[in-house]
Length: 197
Image (cartoon, rainbow, N blue to C red; front, side, top):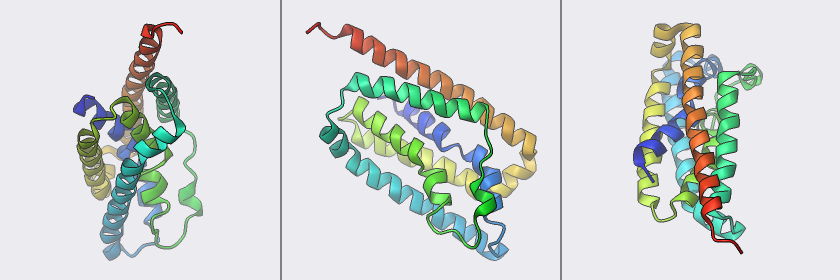
């Protein structure tokens, strides 16, 4: 497994830039002096969830008995669908209905450590079962970059503006499309190379 591509894949799926408006909206009811502390806590909680899933992921995959090419093909399809949503976004509603100070939900889970990120972790683990240390580094780096962007969300929103954030999210979606197609092609190639019977 290539460390750089794993970091990029996880970072693109976490989509911190696309989540900036949502984070700012959810944190509106929180007192301004507490926002940074709450955001830092949620980012750390997301990291804990990611590490727990990273630790248990291999056991889950073994239990399900999934083949590498199955994971790769399914992963390519899933990532492609995530990328399409980033390029053609739909209303990210939870912000409007959430009141009070968030705890774990919805900032840590699902906005940082969401189903898409956890599924990607499973896929990366299955494609490189002996690279757990490398995957741990990839998760940590992607999470740290995402966390820094989200902790600076007010600054980034001021610099980029709403249109800039949308443009960046769509660009990240396009990159993720390429990653997804490559993963799908790798899975098909591996499947076709298998001996018959």
